[in-house]
Image 1 (cartoon, rainbow, N blue to C red):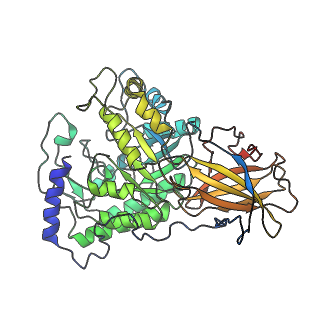
Image 2: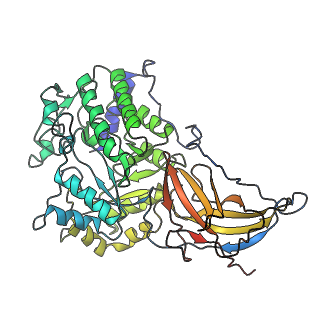
Image 3: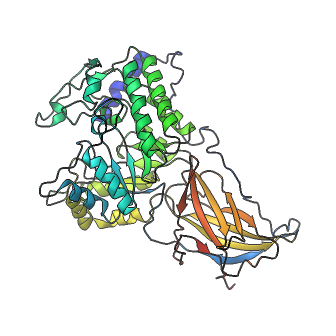
Length: 520
């Protein structure tokens, strides 16, 4: 897509349409830094997070550093972050000459930096008949491998896909839906599917379409909402690939802009209803097709869901949203790597491969996820060939992507009321804030100590130290070697274990034993 030309025409069209007061959900462009999106996810069991004065006239806590940790470089596989191997993109099932489908998918799972996988099927690939889900083989194999390798799946169900000749919708729906031709033409190489048809669009506001849409989500969520196999679900957006546009065509199939926007919000509410345990991830695509993207994006943030982009060298507007998103919001970045397997690698004028350029810009916006994707040439050989030739940028990203939490300082204090406390100075060595609420728990295996509480949403940030205190039972010896600290991430009411990213030894369950190591 030539986004620059696209935006010029969109801005002109926007000026013509005007700012209708009837579009109640329309959200004007704004800077995201300090924008009021609300207070974020609710924090239960909030820990006291300071201040902690130690000297007169406010000598409430006293104490000294008894333990410390330092950053670790290990690959972290936990919820809320990761390098993501693409199993399918826009063409559907991956087809690699000389490999079976199972071998291809297995190879993509086994890529050494991948801690997550992503799959993007067309609606027709998961449902053939009304009232029943019927998955294509590549979906079923992906779920089986996810359980085998312990790598969660992110996914999107595409309602429209210009890169296949057939319509993305199931045949039983196409028999009852009217399809509309949009104004304009998409010119290009006729050997490619996207230039071989007219890209007819359904009217998503059609009651039959919405009925089928809700039924599909009801059936799919019954299997996967809260499943340990699922990381997140991309929201089903309007148009090509589900990205919220039908560029380069003009207009949309709706009666007017208000109907388009109302329909989009209704579709989002359906997804909120059925996916109450799974993060919904909405593309930051500008609202160039006038279908309600701005309202959808705003509602995504206010319901404590996440953001994504399908590119990284893109418009100012998308970079603003991603890089200045609220602290508790994760960002998913999709950007293709150049092809491997003997093909010519695309480099810039300075000799840097285009894939590495994407990697460094993903770091700039503080992403939680990055795509390991050879675009329309999905093949484990291509992915491995790129990594063998250009390992440095990907290795660097794997050691900082998302959040990397640790208790950098641990203080012991006896406060002025005689209580024994541990104060944890929590630090984040990653590039993204915590996408939810971090829960800390002090415990012993025998259950004599079990103290739990949360930091404020989004903490610890990527800069600074967030201190939090826990009060021990009277008379308990904190330095016995039996006390342990563990972390969990709470997102949409679900708790996920989070290992500390430290150089020091952790217990098999990812917890840290509390034991003095500071001799000062």
